[in-house]
Length: 146
Image 1: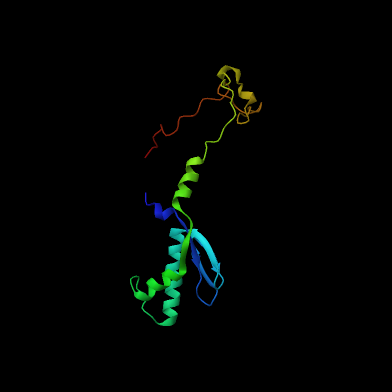
Image 2: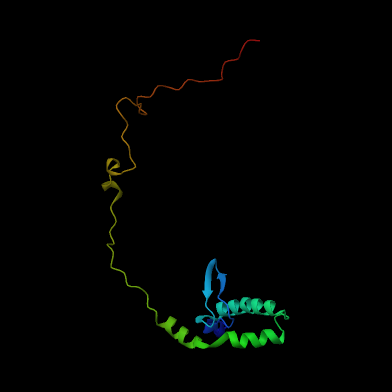
């Protein structure tokens, strides 16, 4: 596992304008100079897109390996707010939830009556039951005369 990806780092909107971008379908808006802590992958995502906007507005090269981009990322991405070791240690401390002891006995099948179940519907007195239903007529056995 790449522990660096678990770090929480600061992202700062270094532009002079309010900036909004979406992540996972949710819009995030940053005021000029505003700093927020995000998991590294989100902070790097926002830094890339904010960097694109700043470099395009300035008419500069916005390739990922350009000197201008590297300098911008140093300004946009700040210090580590929460190191990966602290996140891993906290995750190790999470305990399994405790559940109440449930009764181990289940009702016996013969104790359950069909009438007690909600899904069972008693037939009306006028409806046919398997015992009182007439024999079905045979169809399609006769040949028509030509």
